[in-house]
Length: 436
Image (cartoon, rainbow, N blue to C red):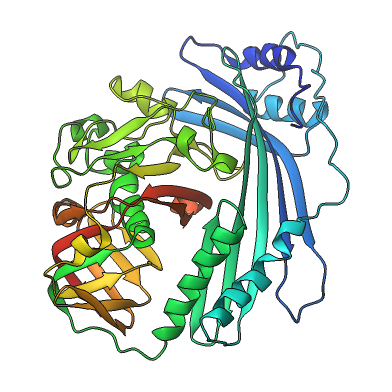
């Protein structure tokens, strides 16, 4: 861990010069990141490595925030950021603290990625299909340390993979906790479904039964629950704490955000403000229990709990965001979810969007399968689900018992791109609107 030898006490003393009022929040966010990319076949061979590190000093006072970011982690950069936030030189400055950070470890490689593409190709051949594809695999790693005047949590580490596949008929992307055989099988299944639906026609617009596979359910719930219950989103329509106790989903729908239960490589015990994370019930039995909040919104409301602050990089202030959604499983098997139904089975989603002012939600699906008389049948092409959050979540009439752990995708709210994760079962929705 690069920050294990950091003199956090000296850093905290230097930060204390900025805290003039009892409610001032002052901290420094230290970040080191690395991306190792393995290009597709046909490009020049070899790993592509991007490394960077830096820090940001923040002062929050009332409803105002000052932020100064610097590339590099060194005493001079820290001192400059302190002075920028303070606007003037402190009257009695502490000596610049030593910022002892471990050096980068030699050349970066990720040999585990080299076999991932061939494994996916081999699994496709076992299904007696072959088609041209260009696969790019990347490993993402980030090390974080937050130091405040009174709060100094342990350093945090994230490590995960992303996969992008260019196909003649479209593009597929996924976040993966690992690039092992299980991940290769999952990607191969997604590519096979895309191949089989490449010439399928979109379904006719209708309102009825839709069964969402775990991957599609993860995207829907991230947009329609996590984003909808972030304190800054709720504040656009009034007081965030007013959402507590409101029925947002069907009875039996239990959804949490728990960063400490995420896949091992992205598990977090503290958020990007250094506040301990918690097992937060967003919906309990369909009713809002605790929205997502950072320190700013927790102080502003007095009823919200901090610990859900995230920042895409050191150049952005933290904001309330979901990390790892967890949906408690139901009792229905895959067969039970489609039993006695005519409708659509949608296994994966391309993207989702939420209008925070109106609550209108859209889920874009690249392909799916028809459900005929309780059986999953022929493929269909691109379509969209549309509805308002309260109405859409109220259509959940069945919850599967088998949970799938994976990435819900890249989230780019407010221009801050960051990975989000989910553990979700399949869901049966009834009376939902499907459009082309």
